[in-house]
Image (cartoon, rainbow, N blue to C red; front, side):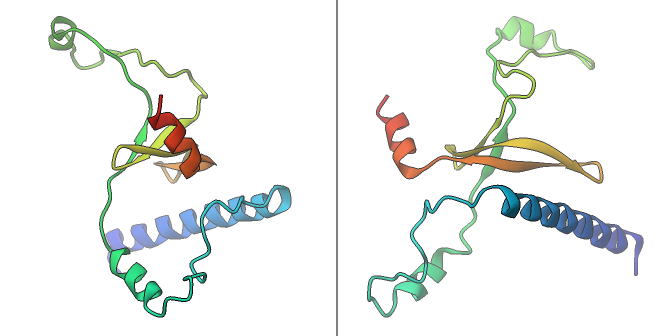
Length: 135
């Protein structure tokens, strides 16, 4: 087994272990809210599940946003190696998770084997998304 393949396997095992620990902790504390309709409930349409299967492989862009800021072009051109750009987010604040630019969740940063990940802490319901659009 090549070194890259072995490293990838170790990394996948570490992520699986971290996710297993999280699942065990979650099962002891709170049960997830029923936000989405059950997939088994197809409303009596015989081909509804097949229609759903057609969209499962469509790629979407998932973005985790640490923070934002606005700076002038003058300050942008003065940035160099080691420059620090102040963001509007505070340390310890939940990070926004966006799918195709739409906020769907918030979470906290986790690190496993020197790789960053995000643990979702709050899912934005469709009702909340509509409320934010109307503002």
